[in-house]
Image 1: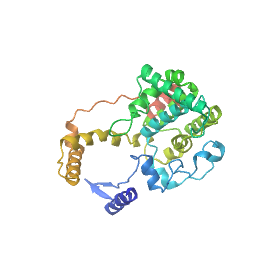
Image 2: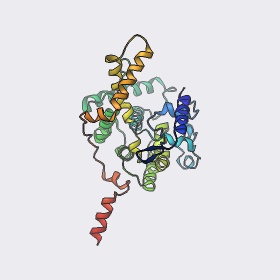
Image 3: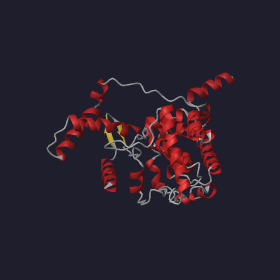
Image 4: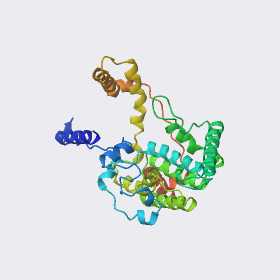
Length: 323
């Protein structure tokens, strides 16, 4: 179904061609970046969630950094972007699950002794309890009806307090800081210095393997640290602008429209009413009437700024100062 929808939209764009709007030629280009891993795997015919859909490597290969960077990538897969929001959430989950296994220092839980299982479960419970009491974070708590508590706000607060997180989880604080820098770079919406960022990502991957050689990188960490530079390089816009966050934020709006402003006779009428409401919401006139909240941007670390391209005004100021 996902592949049929992709083909349907691409065929429509191809038939549309170049449009003339008030004397301006507009050529629509679809960038499929408002997607998550399930859509990417389905579109690339990747049947295993533990296999990278970009380079086709499996989880047992992820820690061989020097070999993995030489693998060819599927050019078609680069159009899906990085999904910065999901990357932040999955990175938080990966690090918390890594902390759960620190007392046993084993990647899998399937072949543990009774004593090791006790250590694992006790450490996991302690970490969840302390994160809740000291930071107000609910990790891996199932929500009734949909998903769990691992959302974007939880992940942001997690990486905003890496010192406290390090003391609770016993994870290496330098590793947490390196991941925070990577996540800030892909989310800030600014142009990235590819060579510097690639070097930082490789250093982070090797540092992870050095500190925790018994734990394989997850597919998300692998994509983030190994493939993000080439994905950013191929993107038409700064990768932070191509986030799926807008689509995720619409979920609560769709839920409200379905519950309060749709007919419940059958699913077709219900979906039709929801879609009409979404079309009204997207109309420039009506959306212009709404009071928009000014989004507070996350303050960037100095190390993050070093990995970004200088803005034009900053360059001109530097030139003036040198003169």
